[in-house]
Image (cartoon, rainbow, N blue to C red; front, side, top):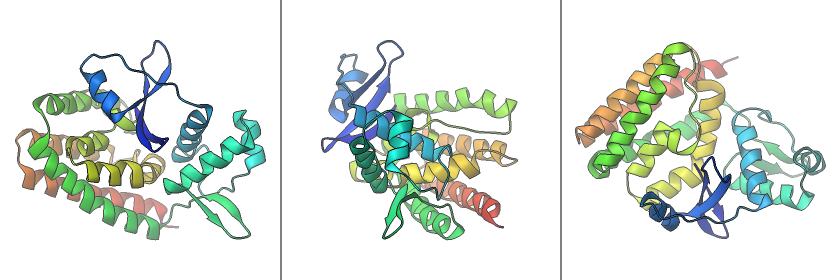
Length: 252
């Protein structure tokens, strides 16, 4: 499940495996969790934006690459107007920047950008963990542990710890579990996908994988124990270690 803005509303993208991709608002999402079937069509512009965003985050479009409306229009089979709209939305996600006499480019991954981003992330996600320990429902905590159980085998079998965006991302679950709408907006609509770009391309593989997974388990246990102070401390420490790991990979 992914979240985006559509017609000035928060919209969640859901693939139910039967009728394909649908979009629902936050209110509809609450109804859906109660078993009420609600769907709303997603436009071609929405689908193009999500696909382009995923391609950037996962490195299929390289960091620093120039974005040509004509080339992207041909590649994705949509009009240049749709590509232009997608690029504007990607700028709001901090994944694309536009410079005079240069045009639109994918942001570069740099040590300076990493430090600034992770300083913000450490503070905000630390707060999210503390609030999650206070506000997560018993069902949400159980689902969080089930998510880690599902991740465990993949971590055991390989040296990578890839997590899809949205509900199957441990960090996303905790952000939503904070139950603080302002914090959720800041993290999921602001820096979430730029953080994922660093994590996916530089932080989800290598010897730190098993350590990072163990850190997730400790954070989840602190939340389950309703130990807000410990949950915040463990999350802040986890993000600091992640920053140091990625920073090392960015060194020439």
